[in-house]
Length: 114
View (cartoon, rainbow, N blue to C red):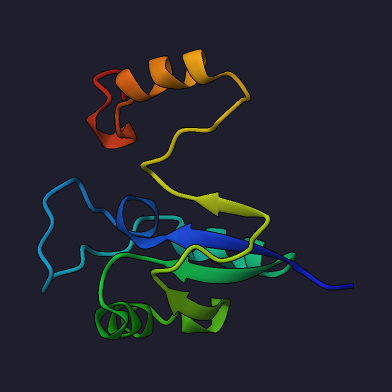
């Protein structure tokens, strides 16, 4: 059976990124990320999706010994079953609702309730 593809974002999902972007520094891996990837990789083909340079991302996944979970690294949206990202809004078919969701969006790590 062919595995479905998941694209997983690096910053804010797999690492401890909190909004302060530095092109030369990638924050440490988030607690639980390795187990998360191990579990998903059993059922899905994983692609690392990042706006960072491929070279920096490759060094980062090697540093944390998680390169075995990814089939590739890209900054291009590719055909996939789902994308996991900290900065996204799900379209539910209603543009008015979408506008509201966009205007009220908060990144999870800036949510005062957390």
